[in-house]
Length: 266
Image (cartoon, rainbow, N blue to C red; front, side, top):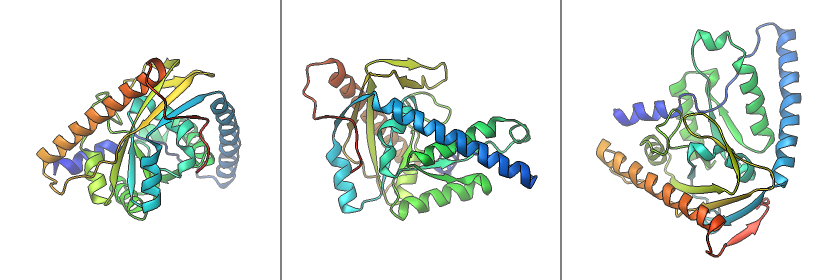
C-alpha cells in the first residue's frame, strides 16, 4: 500500500541514531564522552533559550488534550524543528530515532555526533524512541504503539527529504493507526539564521522573538484510501501554512497577542 510506503519513507533519516563500538572499553569511553558533551550541549541550549521571547497562541488546544488524555501528534514544518527544541521540550514529546542502514554509515563518524544529539534531546526532556537496534518497520510499529499508550509525539510532515512545505500522508496514516489527532503548530522568528539544507532549517538568533500558533486538533478520517489520505495531507499542509502566516502577523502585525512568556512547565 502506498500509504505504508509513505510512512516508512516519512521516517527515513528523521532523527538521531548511534552505533556503539564493539570493544567494551571503547564502548564505555564512547558513552562517557557523548554523555558529557550532551550535558554541556543541553546546558548551552537552556541558556540560549532564556534569551528568547516567546509568544504563544492557542495553548488551550494542548491543555484540553492533556486534560482529556487524548492521544495526539504535534506537526511542525521541518524548517522549524529547531523551535520545537526550545519551545516544546517540557511536554514529554516522543521523537522517532533511527540511522541509515548502510555500511558507509556504519564506518563513518556521523553516528558519534548523532549520539550526542540523541542524548541532548533526552536531557532536554524529549522521549526518543531509538529504532536503530532493530528493523525499521518494527521501530515504526513501536512508535505507533507508544502514541497509542498515551505518549504525545512530534513529527515533521514534510520530512525527511522534502519537498519543503509539502505534507506527506504518512502523518495522517500514523495518526489514524494510533487513534490520535494531529495538532498543527505554526512558527515564526523575528530574527533567524537559515541553513542551506533542503528544508531551510532556521535558528532564532539570541534575544529574538519566537511566535507559536497552536491550531485546532485534526481528527483523521476513517477513510484510509490513498485519495483520502492525500486530501487530508493537503488540508494539513494548508493549515500549517495558515498558522505560520498567523505567527508572522503576531511578530510583525498589529494583531493582539494571546500569550507572551518564556515557556514554563505546565
